[in-house]
Image 1: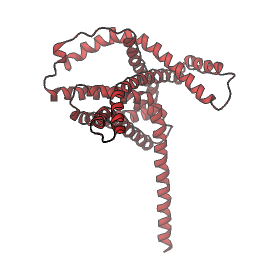
Image 2: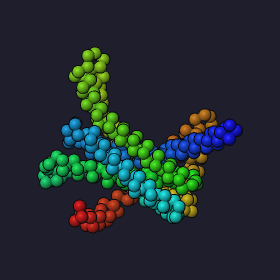
Image 3: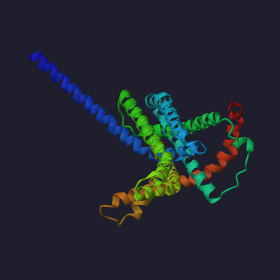
Image 4: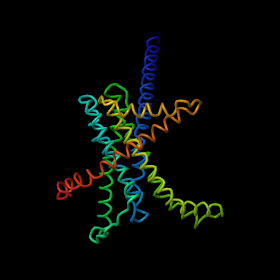
Length: 321
């Protein structure tokens, strides 16, 4: 009997350790995922554009296909690469973070630039020919998964950099949880967004109560404005996170000037401020400065990306498409 009790006690101890490990993984995953908020918001803001032009019945299947591609990107490619970097070449993480941050800055600045200085789009009949809807859907899904790969790489790299030093399996479990959690959050949100207007239309036309019909009409009218707001928030998040990533990566690589400039400027501006909101003000002002720096970096990258890297990329990969 005493042996059985001892065994049960050991099982209980193992269960407690396992539960503590699960809590640690969940906690680390939550913190790591929060660090990638900018890229996540942008992912959720960009994806609905891939549903434009399709029948409503195809929207959710397309979201599902893209989400499955995103899971494959994260779990089968990016997670193993991230673990290899973390364990065998950790010195590569800051430069890769800088590249990802530069990409976010460029994407955000390009959106701002096109908004401030719109240019005429030239219509190409061949390019806009719908043709076979199944083939068009396949192309759209493939394009969305490629875009997701870039954003997922940034998300996973940010998450990896935010995980404290731990064992191989702890890092693997944390990254896997981040990958699945963020994919569910992003594409669950996208599914709700793309179907919200259909739900609103149904409520406005079939609702039994006047309040229901009025609410449905508000949803239908409000969705375009909401999508525009989401794009603005996504753009701001890209610039903020991109600028912050570059400053922190430079700081880790020994270039302390830009990071210290932001830190000392925030402290100087808030030198006489006290009270319970000091932390929130400090965070907000730091985020704004990171955003402005990200915008400046992105604007500088626009001519490099459009006049040098873009043509080279097209020349190399156009024939392989």
